[in-house]
Amino acid sequence: MPIYKRCPRCHKRIPSGSTCPCIKQRYHDYDRMSRDPKSNSFYHSSEWEKVRERAMELDGGLDVYQYMESGKIVAADTVHHIIPLRDDWDKRCEVSNLISLHHDTHSMIEQLYKKDKAGIQEKLKRMVKAYREQDAGGGAV
Image (tube, rainbow, N blue to C red):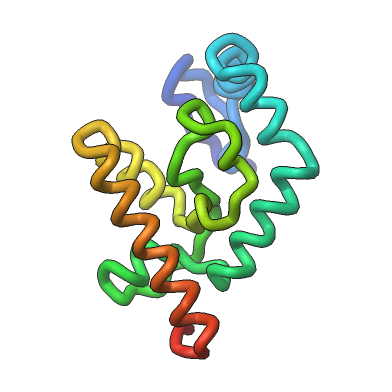
């Protein structure tokens, strides 16, 4: 007998480990209506896949913020634009503008941007530079 859970949005009973159709539709609508079509198309391009993969390689697949801030080794699953696309489209493929993060760290950084965007961006730039220089010298994990 399968295990079920309740959808947090519509409260329908769905098999555990699956996503409710209402959630899928919500994401689809968000992508279609709320996201900038230009950015959305970039994030679905092979160009982004290659740049993202390169950033992950340079960062060793680790969450650079967690490693540099507290020494914790956490696997990265997201690549974040330090300067967002909407602020500077030309930096979208610059690896120096990308940092590998875990999705929880990414959410935290997005919240920090609301308080001191310029300060956090500078901190992230310094972290990426220091981490990659350290890694090139064989010092990082």
